[in-house]
Length: 64
Image (cartoon, rainbow, N blue to C red):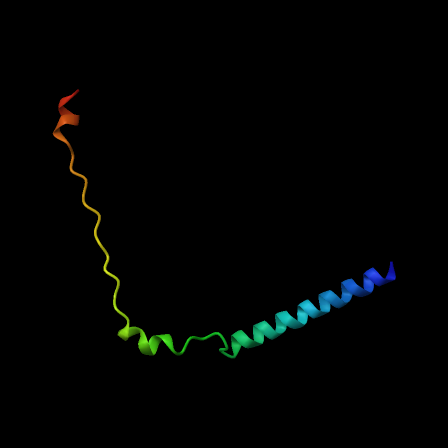
């Protein structure tokens, strides 16, 4: 039973260490993207096609 307590405490300790390392990396800008903004103007813009507007059918209103 004492082995379970030892393993549980060690796993929590390792998880806390990784969490602190992650927070420090985020604060230091490790995950900031500095490359994409400089080349964004070189990428082609995707063409956005507009959906055709639905026309109201006169048949639907005359059937009443």
